Image 1: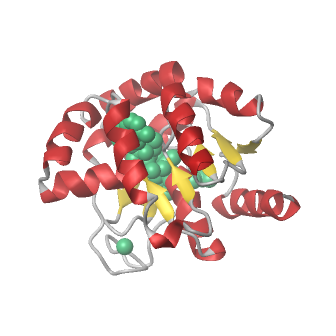
Image 2: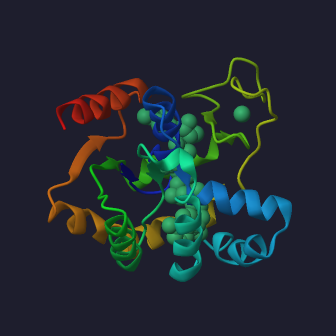
Length: 212
Ligand code: AP5
Ligand code: MG
Ligand code: ZN
């Protein structure tokens, strides 16, 4: 399954819940880049340059890390891709990668949220290194500043500053939104309204999976 949508649509939020429910891994290229930035790897140094400007990390680098991640045993029964693919070349490479293992994309969930709502949402987002995402108003943790799952200290992402969010939205409209038509042509897209409460969106996605 692929979760598609603009920055702040709720891809990470839904992916974390679905991963627990369906017992398949949540793979976020953004989380992989951020973990590399934190530990100061070469990949992290390169990725940071693009992420801080709201631009995409080059396709060859991104495709390489996904290819590596999919080699893990935990991916055998499926996985949830959050934030990948994000360009047409990434989608084409991904199809080829899966095809080699007699697999294919089964469902593409397109989470729709208008640009104005996104800018507001991002300012209240809080993240945990374990992959869970919170919002100070819409989805607060039980104890302020701490993750419900792992007790980790929540942090604000560097790229959630308003100027960067505006750049990320531009990047999304130019490079990522064409993927909706790419997957619609393959009849794989489920459009969901990302402005509804989080649990309603989750239910909608689970119902679509049951039908498949
Ligand atoms: P990435 O980490 O993927 O960021 P993104 O796509 O911009 O998306 P976000 O993580 O910001 O939003 P989300 O949809 O996960 O929303 P969330 O659930 O957190 O990528 C970061 C950067 O890495 C990119 O800019 C790029 O540079 C690089 N990168 C990553 N992948 C790449 C690739 N494939 N190719 C090239 N470069 C790549 O929710 C947002 C907030 O809203 C939270 O506070 C949440 O609590 C709240 N919320 C969620 N749902 C709801 C709801 N229904 N109602 C109210 N509030 C809600
Ligand atoms: Mg995310
Ligand atoms: Zn955590």
